[in-house]
Image 1 (cartoon, one colour):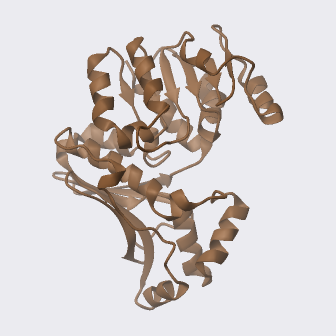
Image 2 (cartoon, helix red, strand yellow; image 1 turned 60 degrees about the horizontal axis):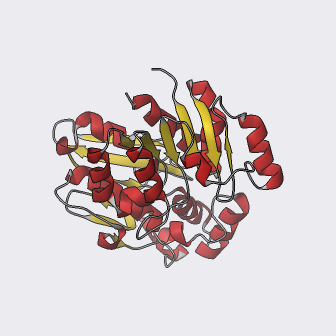
Image 3 (cartoon, rainbow, N blue to C red; image 1 turned 120 degrees about the vertical axis):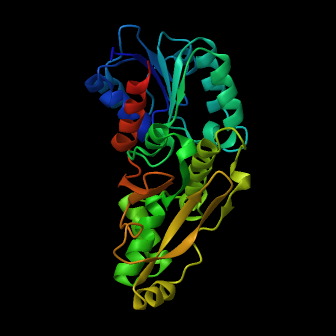
Length: 318
C-alpha cells in the first residue's frame, strides 16, 4: 500500500490521534482543521508542533478552516462532531471531497446514520470511496467483518456499544452504588462528558445500531435515528441491579440491529457471559447464516483506538 495524503477535519481526540499516528502508518497529513482554524502544507504538516499549538493556544493554525477542504489530499478524514438531522457540516465536507475525486473516511456518525441513502448515492456518482469503520465500536472491526462475510449472510447484530453507559452499569452492579453517584464518578474520571445525555439516554448506541441496520439492509430500506426504538439507563435504580444479581444476571444497555429493526434498551443478561462486558469495553455479536454467532470485543472509544479504525480504513482504499 502506498502512502496517502490526508486532510483531517476535526481536532478532537480522534482527529488529533489520526494526525499523531498517520506517519507510523505511512501517510502524510497535508491539512488539519479545527472549527476555527487550519494548517495546510503540501509537503506535510509537523504533527507534534501543530498538536502542541492546539493544546497551548486552542487552535491548530492561522488559516481559515475551509482551506483544509481545498488542500492537496487523497483522503478526507471527517472527524468533526456528530450532528443529527441534516448531518451538516459533515455531509457537505464529504460531498466536496468526493466531487473533487478524493476518498473519504468518516469517524463522524452523522452522515452515515442520518443520510445513508444520500451518502451512498454520492459515492456511486463519483470516483472516490466512502468508508466508516470508526463510526461503530471504536477499534472493533465490526463493519469490515460484515463486509468480509457479506451483509446478506449476516442476519443481525447486537451488543454493548457505549462505553460510558456500560461503565455506569458495571459500577452500579459491582459496588452497589446508585446512578447519580456513579455518573459523577465517571465524569470525574473523564469517562462521561459534562453533558452525558448522548450516552446515557442511548442516542450514541442507537446511531451505531442505525448504521449497522443500514449496512445490513443493503439499500432495501434506509434507517435514521427517528426509526430507532431507544431507551436509556437514566431510570435504572440500583435495586434493579441487586435483584438481577440474585438471579445470576446483570443489566446492560443492549443495541439490536437487523435489516428490519433498530432497538436500544437496558436488558437482563446472564453474568459471566459475552454480553456482560465490564467497564468501558464494547462487544458486538453477529448472527450469521453459515458461521454461527461471532463475538467481537474491544475498546469501543478513545482517540488512538478510534483513530486505528480510521487508519485501517485508509489502508483498505485502493
